[in-house]
Length: 142
Image 1: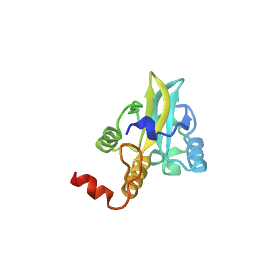
Image 2: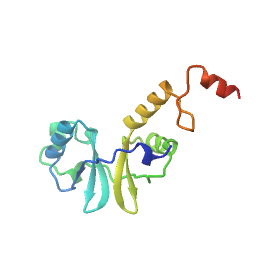
Image 3: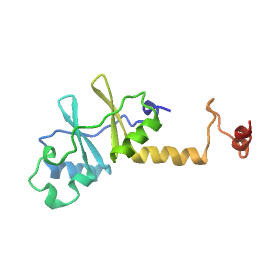
Image 4: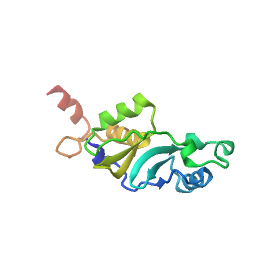
């Protein structure tokens, strides 16, 4: 499975010069934990809820002061396994998905956990058909 199969195409972005307080309020209202920082059409960083957790940290500061940079990105054809290892290895919470310099989507650790949790409950054959109870054991035995 590839990131293009699971990414969210609706990505909330923010500019480096935007106020951190405004960015925090946007995250709170949208119930998200990451904003992709864009300078023009270029992904320059990530602003996470952890970066601006306290009012003291964000008061009177710009996004550029608090964002994580450079942004670690992935391509649409990156496998879920590669993405998980990238997130785990760098202790990241999200990966913006970029192709030819264009932001296409985002994948978060929560997205990967949901995929894992769903897959554990509902194993799927490569053909896309659901397996019935006991079928997984039979497949493994083959």
